[in-house]
Amino acid sequence: SKEERAAYYAARRAAGITPAPKAKQMTKAERRMSQEAQRKVKEDKVATQAENAEMLEELKLQGLSEEQAKEMMAELARNEEEAADEDEEDEPEEGFRSLEEVQEEIEEMEATMWQQPLTLPEEKRLLLELSDLYREASAAKDREKAREEAKAQKRSRGQILRAQVDEVNAEIHSAKAHKKAVAQEYQDLMDVRQREAKRVNSCLRRQELIQRKLDEKEEERAKLADEFKKQEQRYQNWLSRNRASPSAAP
Image (tube, rainbow, N blue to C red; front, side, top):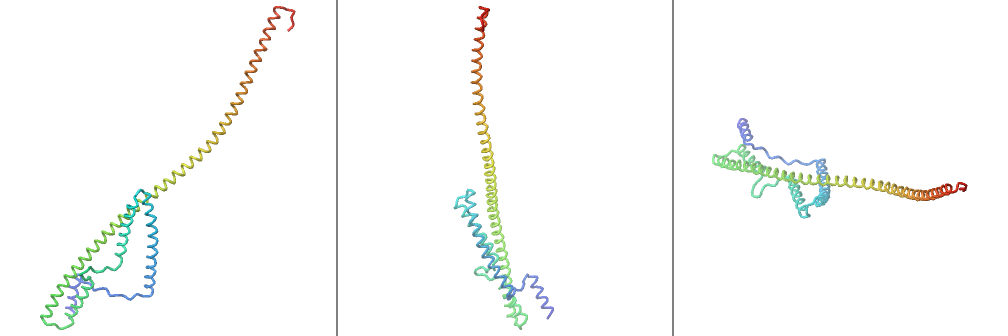
């Protein structure tokens, strides 16, 4: 009856049983989008490889050994691959069915119970099987939850490692910028030194020229002083002669 079916579906919703999603046929636009996404993934992969090669060299420049740098890059690549795999459809664990498969079987068995006349033993058998399937569905949910938690942990490790690599890269770029600034400052100082050296050389040449002129003037002054002494001596001699002989001419 309608009441029984309504009660049945209400019980299913309360148990958390949802219908398995049906496969949807892709349209041409969706196929084009899928192809474009695949092409973009390939381009991103090539770009990532180039970026990783550059990052490896930067890590080596930061002081890490080649082995340490490669190990860090390999760990980062593993985390990125695991993160990419998480976006793909999950495969059920070996020996277990997926939650969708279990739900499909539950739906088929429940449909059999409601649509076909059953004897009491058959109904009891189906109820027992349904009970087992409900437990299997619950276990599948637990496995999916555990898998999602594991994925979250992997993503967290990947994010931490990526943050470490980004931090190293930031330090490298900062060191490069500082090195460039220091090199520019050094070059500026060298230019100032060269200009000052030219000024000093010019001053030294001027000082040397002035010193030569001073030496020449000093020599000229000495000669004039000698000549003055000679003239003074002659004058003193003349005075002496005049005192001794007033009629003598100078």
